[in-house]
Length: 100
Image 1 (spheres, rainbow, N blue to C red):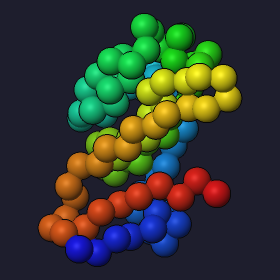
Image 2 (image 1 turned 90 degrees about the vertical axis):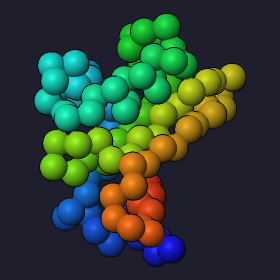
Image 3 (image 1 turned 135 degrees about the vertical axis):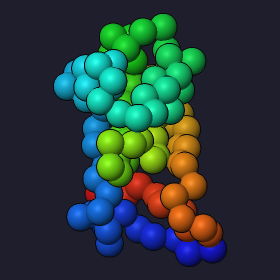
Image 4 (image 1 turned 30 degrees about the vertical axis):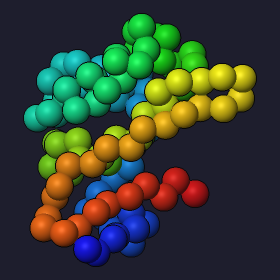
């Protein structure tokens, strides 16, 4: 299995922070698979506003499709637990986040 670092393919895939603008695009149907993020986020948080106060999330977008998500699913003091999920894009290839 090949592993590609997102910094090596930044022109093809874009990590984007989930903020108010991104959320508006999501709920307005601008992505083919908005449930990939929306369901994951709202399973962990009461609302998007609750999420924004307590957590963080990033997505990788390819051709109006969310192909990977990193979502803070719980927080305690100054620690945030995260879940990372990816779609299978190409046979035997995994894409991962590098948010340096």
